[in-house]
Image (cartoon, rainbow, N blue to C red; front, side, top):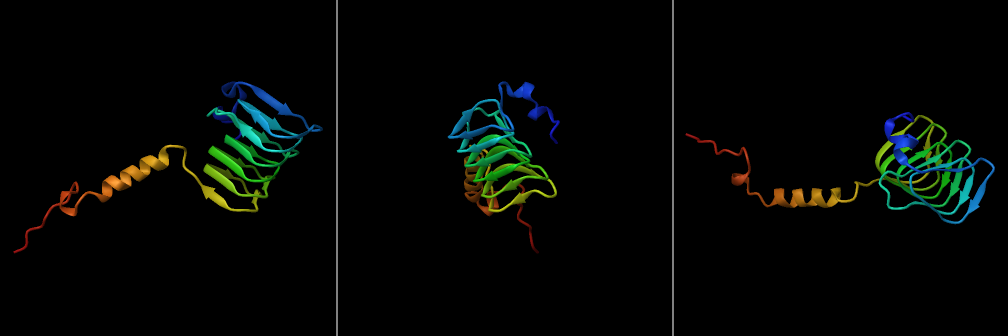
Length: 152
């Protein structure tokens, strides 16, 4: 899970660390990978980078909104989490807020004290709506594979 190629720092570019005894107040905007071992009071926002990832370790604490394509939590988040790619909740994760995810992996012991909202990646919703609209315009006798059975 944590050792996958997708989550290695070599594929993420810039690595930023908020160390264990560090406290930050204010919005944190980043690209690449952000690891939080300390505390942040404010929002965590990935700059429009589809490869960005936020890691909140067991000692990490965020009070605010977390927005990133990929989010890995093993600490505490007091606020909503938005992961357009993958959300991983490790065994010590606690989220006091709603989680919005595309893909989710949740280990035994992880807690969500809020709603879980499945969201597709940008563009997928529009494509699905277009397919449904197209399918609804096909008449039964025009649909592929539809054959009239002769009676008699």
